[in-house]
Amino acid sequence: MLKKRDLHESHVLYELMAHPDVFPFVRQKVRSYEEFLFMTKQTIEAEERGELISRTILDEWGIPIGMITLFDIEDNCGFLGTWIGKPYHGKGYNRPAKDAFFKELFNELGIETVFMRIREENIRSIKAAEKIPYVIKANETRKSMYAQLNENGAVYDLYEIPKDQYTLFLLQKDLSYADFLYLLEA
Image (cartoon, rainbow, N blue to C red):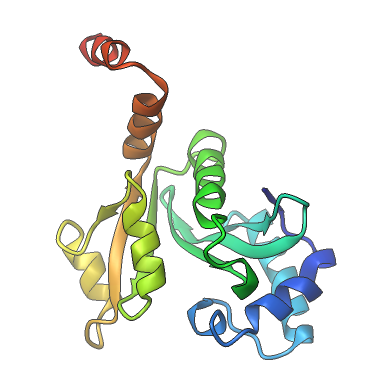
């Protein structure tokens, strides 16, 4: 479902990203295939330096369909950016991609908190985020960060995924209620 970024999938990903329903919501905007190749090289190098974590989202046949990235990593926290190509919208790829990415981030790479900034007009992404049971809308609880994101007027909603909320969700999902209560008391 996810793989480390490489240059081989660039052509397919560029074509998907350039679609007018996708492009406005992509953080790393490029206007040509050559720019996309250059940006992909920069992304791979930035991951090697620990500045971000980026994966290609694959469909069930191993075909690249989008990207998921944790940007601006600082103090084991970062901002999530995800996009999926238009032909794959509404087909159930977003949630499993996020689940796999969060599992890697929290369990293997030491990330403690993932933030999402979502444009208020991006209703599709807001609905997707609010369906995830371990996501917290953080406009009120992280007021200074919310204010910083919206210095020039309200544009973004802020969401937070703390490692403990994510882990608690997985425990609740995998354990019976009695087992869960036992763990809480221990």
